[in-house]
Length: 78
Image (cartoon, rainbow, N blue to C red):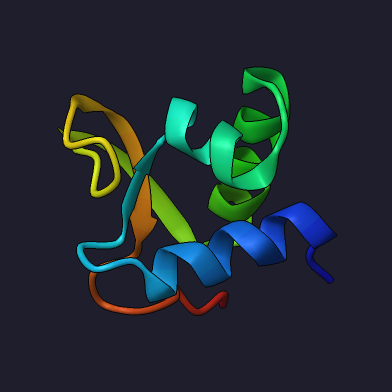
């Protein structure tokens, strides 16, 4: 079961055109600090929902480490 913040971030990524958010923009959307945003992102990475990479953030358009949905869907566990 996802935490409330993780569910909110996942919903934001799905709804956002381009679907990429940097830590700073995630902080603003989730109303949390950077540690909180990173913790939420780690939760989603651990569940196979998102991955990270250095790309343009869809919100601020800056180049940074961003979270985004897995390009080919959620990885299935064995």
